[in-house]
Length: 96
Image: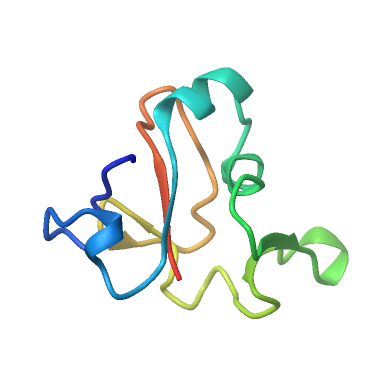
């Protein structure tokens, strides 16, 4: 079971009250995602939405969401349009 840093408590994803989906480093290496959307394709209930002819692409969670709502974070800091991925990414975690 992959460990999770989403809650910053050191608890196992199995010991949390919410669902934590982890896309581990090995999956990222195998699939070589170009951006966060490609990596999130491994997480159920998360899709890429497109509005205004692609000018407001958004990561949708169960049909809801916006990249500007503060729910997308990198190392615990909220991002706006934070969809880039690089070789240093160790995992992608989704707290549902």
